[in-house]
Image 1 (cartoon, rainbow, N blue to C red):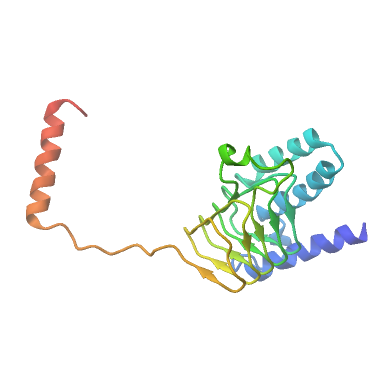
Image 2: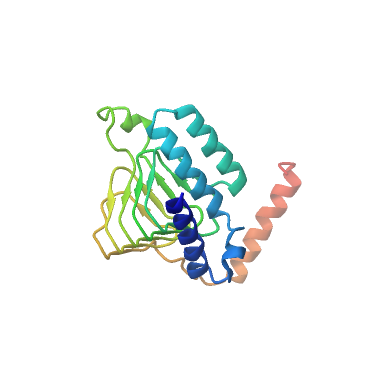
Length: 202
């Protein structure tokens, strides 16, 4: 019991340290990551003991409560994992997440698809292994049985399909600022919109 309380305090301290909008442990109790992480620990213990249906039920309930943080009960999570905001985070069954990892919303640690995974040996890993102190930016997608090394940074919107060395930065292409439409282009666009409106397509 003392170990459980210690881990809970550790989780609260991590939220206060990494979320500038949270100032106290009491406020951290309302953070959406907590029910996801705490429920996952119970679900994972049940899952490893063969109570797969009950474990999945707990994971399903946590997903509903947290706004879509979906952690498969088979996934292994380290200590001091911080899920910021949390909406639409997906962590697959054979994924492993190290200590002190930060995960932003809409991150996927997934598989490459049943059409490939069905050809793997039974029990083979299908999901990523994420090292310690890794940061996974918003909407980062990391797919397959690859490894993300310690201290790596996966930027927002990055699609990762291969191993990432320790300390590496993986960034998605930045959006390009394009010039405004010319007067001729605007006139052509207006003409097309008028034609669509009169054609009855809308």
